[in-house]
Image (tube, rainbow, N blue to C red; front, top):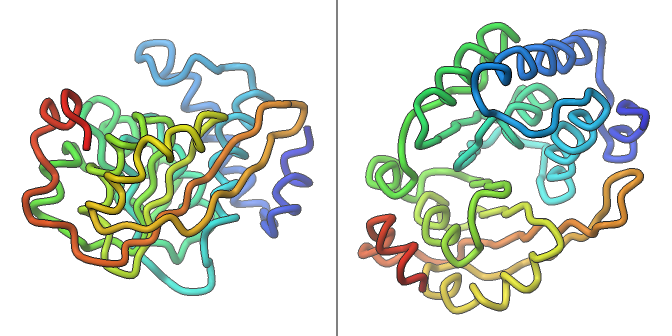
Length: 232
């Protein structure tokens, strides 16, 4: 796989600085992964394909013309938020994750990569929604939880008129059927389902684009244990 060629298909052209940032990202990910479980994927070409390229496929659902705020929920090792922040310096990125050592890794990473448009915060989404309720233009989540659970974590953070974008594998449409009622109850409406596959892979991946069309009722999000035990 030629990373640059695949990105050009998405309308992304990397200059020398951004190319170097991705290389440093890979090196740092592998280095820290030896002492902290960040990813099971470590072979270089696979990281570039399954993490970097896959993260940037989200541009299919984004309008990259204007500056906007983006919150990445449960980002793990920084996907899709850090690749997005490298490529699009005008996006103001906030990363939240419940595991503090991942946040420490991410803050160290963005400092090393000299990325100024990212801040990483140790927080649970349901708690962070009390502070930043309906604040973000875009809220993203990649491989965090089933959609009926994710919707209650992400839509309260999304401003009315903004978008919650869930990156899913082949189960996306199935999860969408399961989560339809929850999405509507939380103020969302499905706008688009974008299907694609990565180079040399047959599995269809899906990007679910959900627009926030009305305010989320104040009783949501509930406590996470309640969300998990009794999804909407």
